Image 1 (cartoon, rainbow, N blue to C red):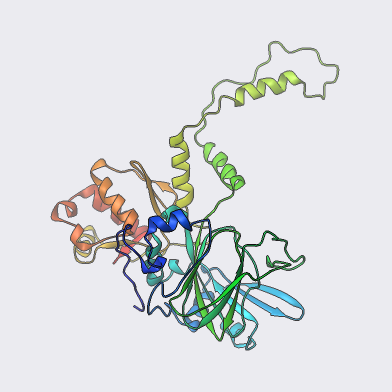
Image 2 (image 1 turned 135 degrees about the vertical axis):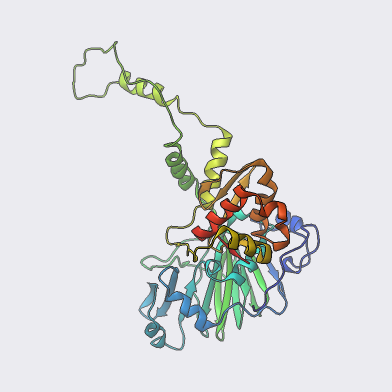
Length: 388
């Protein structure tokens, strides 16, 4: 395993990852407020995979990838999966390969994301890895979410601007800014990192061939949340009664929807109610729901006896594709609310927070807890968890 930094730390201690400040200070002074350049955020970091391995991922059917190229005729975006022969035909410059969700397929990438656990798991999106030859990039743009840009192998020049002019070039398949004005710029070496809040314009340009690791965070729009919440409510709403109008007046126009009908329907719909716990359940289900392209790999079946033996020897970890969240005593795994016993709550909190349970955690008492073991075995068979 290459460059696998530990993620066990106290949130109050100074972190090299955050330029020597602690997590609380970073959140108060920088998060969603201003950029931060961090030299040697992860000393000795040179990446988790090679350009060829990244290209291999881009050829997989369950991996989201894009190939962005720039010619005199303009920008071009191709979506994967790709054939290996496509990469053999690429020119020596002016293109970038982007691969999303690398943490879903590479255990080391999932472990890397654990270094950013000072931001809630519910906000974390995924790890995107990009490769570009010399001078490659995707143009000046901005994101609507927070991002940490960690430099792997090679070097990249980053130009940023907090300009208010976010007008886009029309007629191109990318969100390229029309009038980018550089305010600051730095060349990032391996292990260096740049944090950017939402809507800070930036332009990354490869200085020689390089790879960049982008840790992105979810920022659903109000419209998206409202639409999904209303869909969630469909299974929760239980209204009684039927539309009735014993006071129906004679209408001059039979095709007209009169105000009295609008008012009656309005009164019926006003009976729709929800509580904060409904919203918490919605958030837990929605933000742990796997993206539509994600497919869980089911392992070979094992007996309960063998499963217990492996738990005691290896421990267990969430799959890189899994998301586990909790609110109070409610737990959510991959879009589903779990049925749990109070005696197991501390264990599930630990699994959700650390994404793994060490073999030492499985005492003889836990290994003989039939309901616990059967629940873990079900998750294992579904591909949600795996042995460490």
